[in-house]
Length: 97
Image (cartoon, rainbow, N blue to C red; front, side):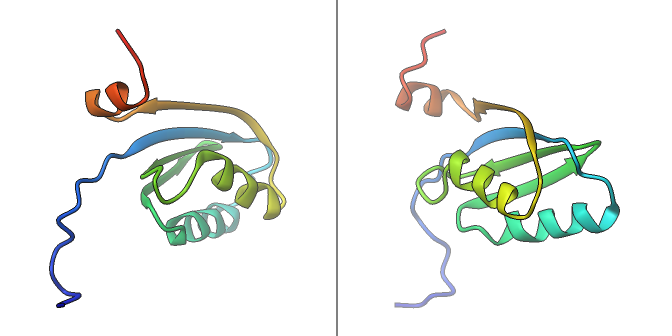
């Protein structure tokens, strides 16, 4: 099997926003970005003004695992919020609008 071929598996990504209290320097931002980007299932990481937004595939990594990884780096979390990235996620997670 050729590992260079595109993965035919459908992927469903979820967005999570995490507020970090003591995210004080560009070096901290870079460390967090690098760490989160290496987690299997993480698609994108954006960090601005103490807020981290991660688009991830919950089959591979959970919000809890990301929170714990951030805490292990010495950061304190303020609030956590998440929203399904699409109607398919809504249906799979039982959301009815």
